[in-house]
Structure formats: structure tokens, C-alpha cells
Length: 147
Image 1 (cartoon, rainbow, N blue to C red):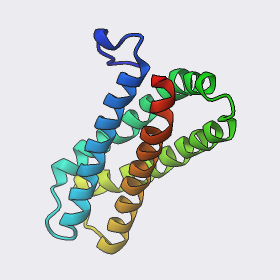
Image 2: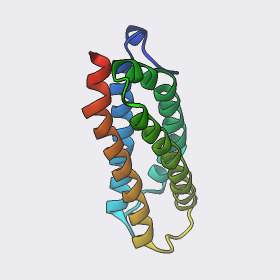
Image 3: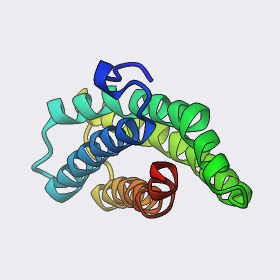
Image 4: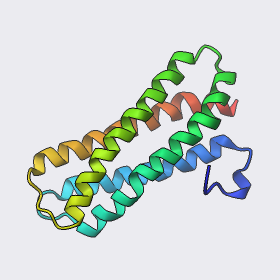
């Protein structure tokens, strides 16, 4: 994975933990925007999040698909359906993140927030989904690949 630290080479679980931390930081940022709706939204923060969200998810998902899931499959041979479900969630999360990015970019570039309740619901839907996915990986995938 791009950006992996040299000391993490060969340690997929450590890289995954760092990726989780980065994703959780973005979740916290999304939550802050949702909490600030409708009038307290920082447009610069919307642009910052929008610039990071999809690239971070794509990079993280590619790493999981290429490195983590094969290691998990070896450690837990009966986990085929679980891996399939996690991969499907990756696709769904990236699609959802694309939609959220569009809204964040619009707000960041000065467009008015047409429906603060809908925007908040959308932001919360994404960060709650990401947090659930991370929690599952921490409870099931990481322990298996750590051996």
C-alpha cells in the first residue's frame, strides 16, 4: 500500500491498523460536519474531506483485497463468504463516498445546503457504515491474520 512505513513492510496487520486509524479520523471529520449542520459548516473542511475520502477508501480497499484478504483466507479457510461480503461492502462504500464527495465539494465551493437534514443523514450513513466495517475487521480479520 502506498504510504506504508518501511518498518511496516511484511506486517499487514500493522498497516491495516494504521489504515483503520486514518479511516476513523475521516469518520470523525464527517461527523463534525454533520453535527455542524446547517449553519456551522466549515467549507474548507468540506473540501479537505472531499479530497481525501475516495482516494483513501480506494487505497485501503485495494490493500485489503490484495494483501489482507488472502492472508485471512489462509488463516480462516472457511471465511470465503465473509471475504466476499467485505468486498461487496467495499464497492458499496466507495459508491456512497463518491456521492458524499459530490455534496461536500458543492458545499465547499459555496453552494447553499439545500436540505441539511438529508445531508446529515447521508454523512451519518457513510461514517456509521465505515465504522461498522472497521469494527468487524478488528474483531474478526485482524485477530485471524495476527495468528
